[in-house]
Length: 358
Ligand SMILES: *[C@@H]1O[C@H](CO)[C@@H](O)[C@H](O)[C@H]1NC(C)=O
Ligand SMILES: *[C@@H]1O[C@H](CO)[C@@H](O)[C@H](O)[C@H]1NC(C)=O
Image (cartoon, rainbow, N blue to C red; front, side, top):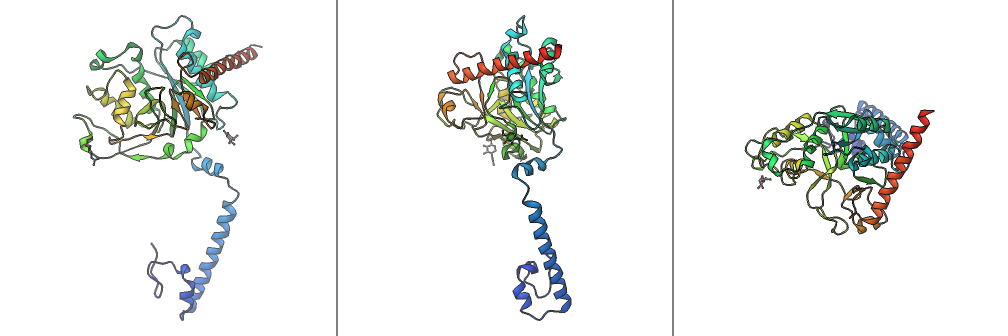
């Protein structure tokens, strides 16, 4: 609040109107006060400018949250049925590929020392955990979340372990996490995504009771959650349209026990979502645009799912593409890049493993 002085315009600090002030007869104490005030203003201006100018924007953003614990994360469940040889497990190789791109590949690795964490299902084979650890990843093992009885009829066996992915929201050891499914081609370093408004903005939960199902309780009062937009087909225009759907292959969030507990209540509510697309459908219900907790959507320049030739050919293309390295329908250029990543990854680790044997 601005204090009120006699003779000053109401609600205006005195130094805004020196001419008015000095045009009147003023007491000597007031002159002294104003002199002191102008000196301190001059001092402040000098101090602020000498302090402000040498700091670049990049430094400001790194100063903003000096103690923040950030992480990249992915999730790996057992492939059912499990191939005999780990190298024949496409999802396991994909997991190692995304980890390699973020930890070690020269063009795309983190340059802020953000750890790469693999959340593994408790039934994942030991040899896979050992390999990922040796690759440089942090391993967090979690108890699998079992689907509920009502989900069973609509669910494919290979999707059984996907609800467990929601356990990343329990990771209170981190402040913010970027989650990426294994099947990704990273084109540019992703570190800067942690600084953009969608990734830093805490949202307030709306209080619309009509947007709740019977028995739906426990929405947290605020949350931070941004995701890449989902698409249902390779056949989309450029830039990809916003269809209001949350892609659970690429999202950034602030862990929250309350948010996790809320998801668990949705698991117990039959027909809150279609279990054919397990965690994806649950999160899309919880964060639908017209609900109480809509998600923030990343611009396509960060991530595109089901990329087509158009998405790829744009000169300043997206930073990452959601695609399986073994998918024959994938666009030729993306498949070729993924092949290069896979070979570079094997060569990199072969070199490192051999060096550590001597
Ligand atoms: C990290 O990489 C970005 C480009 O991806 C670059 O602009 C930045 O200067 C790099 N920072 C450091 C500390 O090397
Ligand atoms: C509250 O939610 C209902 C059901 O989704 C919707 O029809 C209504 O428009 C919402 N009201 C407001 C104020 O957002």
